[in-house]
Amino acid sequence: MTHNTLTPTPTKRILTVDALRGFALLGIMIVHMIEQYLGSGAPKEHQNYAVHSGIDQVFMAISGILLQGKFFAIFSFLFGLSFFLQMETARRKAEPFIGRFVWRLLLLFVIGFIHSLFYAGDILSIYAMVGLGLVLFYRASNRTLLIFAGIFMCGVPRLILWAVRAAYDIPPTDWDSLDPQNAWYFDTVKNGSLWEIFKANATRGFSMKLFFQFDTNSRGYMTFGLFLLGIWVGRTGFFERLSEHRRLLIRMIWGSLIVIVVLAVGLIFMFNNIKDYNSLPAMIGMSLGDIGNYLIAVFEVSIFLLLCLGKRGPGMIGALAPYGKMALTNYVMQSLIGTFIFFGWGLGQIGVWGASINFGIAILVYILQVQFCKWWLKKYQYGPLEWLWRSGTQFRWAPLRREAPVEMATN
Image (tube, rainbow, N blue to C red; front, side, top):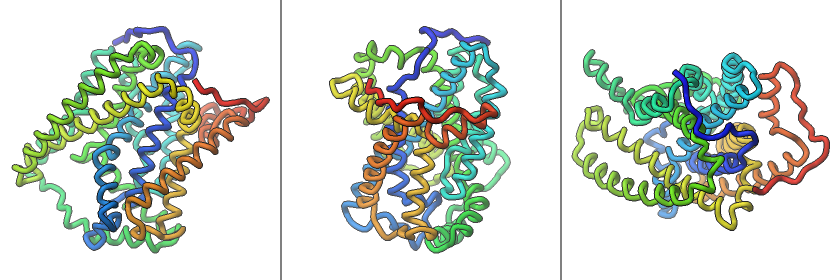
């Protein structure tokens, strides 16, 4: 199968994509800070660890409606888009791609696993595992990409897993039985040493992450579908010709909003009438909920891109693009800062502050990181982890320092 590229091959870095990646990381950090980097279900005795007041409930609702599951989707979509851009760069230079890409993913898994020792919810190791499947699709037609993206994003693997369990009479997960493990894990991250947290995250934390990703929760399958969607959008040249798509972005905003409202009403009615959450209607409802998350992400991305095309767009891009260029470094640093604040090896503040305070901490950390990125990239070509990743991929130390300091571009 071959693909058709609808626009000229991109020849330079697309700063709007970097800015969008930086925007996605803001949402991800807010969610993680509000959840206090627990990366696990909270035990019953600590169910309200993030809610201490009415204002905390408001921030939890905002996070649940606008952030949770949405900015992960944006970040995953951008990973697929980056895969396409890397592939096109290699093709243009007549360089081998697949072997290097697989090696690059192996290095990403190592980085992700080390990161997961601090934060069990690490997504990098999952990206590395799921990303291997992209080598099967990089030559696929656009139609094939969209078909399989729809299959994975709409929850078909969830329905297949449910059907297999039903056919073989395999009992569903008893969530109440996990409460002792959740209580042990909560106590470990709150009071344990760094070594004890490492051991917990390397064993139970990693296994529970795999369960969350590849069981009926289906996050891993959704991730792969979003990767494929990113490749397809990359082929259309959408971001290279973004200024031509103002009307399309406006239609996407209004169209997604209308469907979101209709879908939300339907889901409320549907789940109010579901008594068995391991039933087929429940599985279908979960998949419809995922679709709702995608549509909210489309709504948010469309607004962001319209703002980038507006008068204040160059300023937004100039502020956020450096952050997005250092996405790997910033994502890991978010976790190191967050786990230091909340876990026992640092300040041990998990459960002490509510969602509203932690929202403010996330914004403060983000602002500081943005300023650090602008300063760093004036002197260096890559972020620290990006440089290590690139050097490992190329089997040689990549040049890091710029020959002369530069001012970061704003458009």
